[in-house]
Image (cartoon, rainbow, N blue to C red):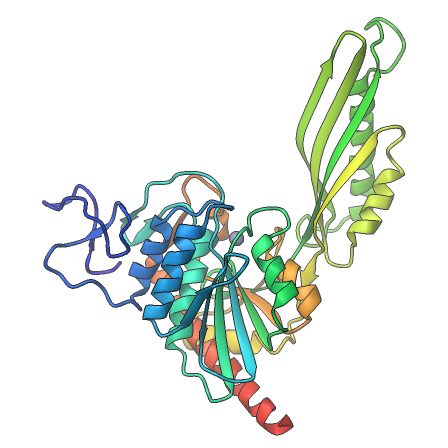
Length: 394
Ligand SMILES: [Zn+2]
């Protein structure tokens, strides 16, 4: 916890505006100097205190740009609305791509027993603040520059901030995605996802008659789908390697003449299973049900032999832990930029992803500090390799 912070309701403090001009529930004791701009607890608490629901991130983006500028970054807001900060100069680039937006849910921002509570604390402002702090701390060799991006819209379908970067930014030499992996873990891959809306409409029949009703027809489709998935997955352990569908909603309506049944579902795709193939297979089970698809992302995974993995493993070991290599069942901006840039890519960030999107979202500040240490070391190792390789090829 930052030494200059205190909790509301403690001692005689009143609520003040903090140095970012935002009314927040954490503030500084009067008479004490504001923390240094590189203070990670202060940086993260400041960022979490500014709401940044997807599509409404501009206040948090402007704050982060200004904070990065104070920390020595050349900082700006790009045309997509992302906060971008670059440090160092050179032809080789390490891109740290985090996201600044959050899902809905107002969670009072507070620090209790060294744990910061608040929407976005773990997904993904903890990882983003870690990026900003480690990027400023790392010693970069000549010829290597580092850019941190706080992207907008990651929590929405299509991820507009990262999609814009993918289409307008030249391919970096190494990319680290900012998502919680735990300070002692590194993430190699994420599943893909597509969503389905299935609907069926038929003339209303007498309930005592032999005809199948629209809801029955829809349930039969869902049963065929579940049966196919079970058969397809066989004895694979449920998780990263299975093809899964989650039923999101089911609705049946009628107007006296016709009845209609509709369901929505999300498919999670393992790597090697393309969305086009899943659609094709599902169409074959439709039997009169019409299917409407929304594409989100194909699965993407890096290999353990990626040049980014060893620097993280050795940095985690140097900080006293046994490193863990992970894959995730959700999606992230790795799915958006990875297939197009095709450069070495992993995801890293402090925090326990089980708190993502939950009402008790939280992150331990001591873990964030550890992650800054690990990431600083990893960046320095990656940058040194890039500088040597570039020197040799130049
Ligand atoms: Zn996230």
